[in-house]
Length: 303
Image (cartoon, rainbow, N blue to C red; front, side, top):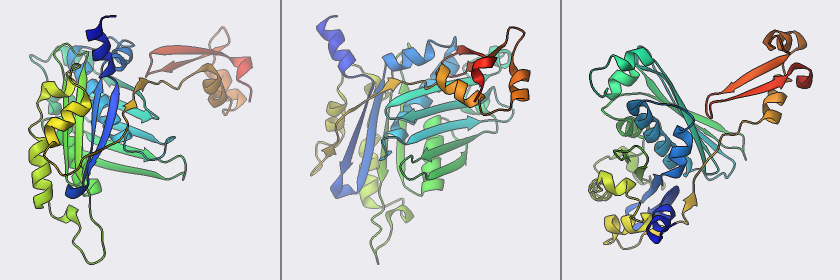
């Protein structure tokens, strides 16, 4: 491996968190490469589908990196009505990413050009679920899939469900092998007797941070030769203080395995398991995420 390639690899598959205390702002930068290849290689997705999944994976990493619970899980799900895409699911847990898309091959092939978001999702909605393992709490927000991009839909989610001003940018390079994104948010002060920031989208602190965030270029987000902390410095080097958390590594993580699937099947009654089994006595379970089939012998599925 050359020095250049080592540098490139060092700047990929990472999430970097930061805060700007004087502006009451926080954010995340994410860039994925090999992880993206690993996830997409399990499926033979056409370019438009691979691209939207790549963006969704970056978004899942941006949101998931905000979890304070190390064992917590973030699930991003887009379901549609009358769209080319029927279902898109991504999730994040402890730095592990996975995702898949279910779509209509014939309708996609009939598109004369690259379909827009409304063509892909029709009348769809975006559901974002936070599961906190430590407390057992589960929170879900749902917003319509509107706008020209998945990034705009995510901004709508924060505006409607969280009531937090947010800037989201997602970018995929022309090869489809590199993707990156940024999430910047203005935090409510929440002090007694003071106005909460989320009630003022034109707050001068947020206007300043958003204006700087909007200067980021699409290619900077996925540029493997540009370290994330250098990109952060380009954006906010004039600020009084920018606090940066340690970069978190991202990996592909499909949590399916024979033991887990066997335990799930074991929860069904004997008659139900018998109906699931094929003529050879195997219950074949498909994993949509990794595109693998797990054959479980019926006699081994006894609880």
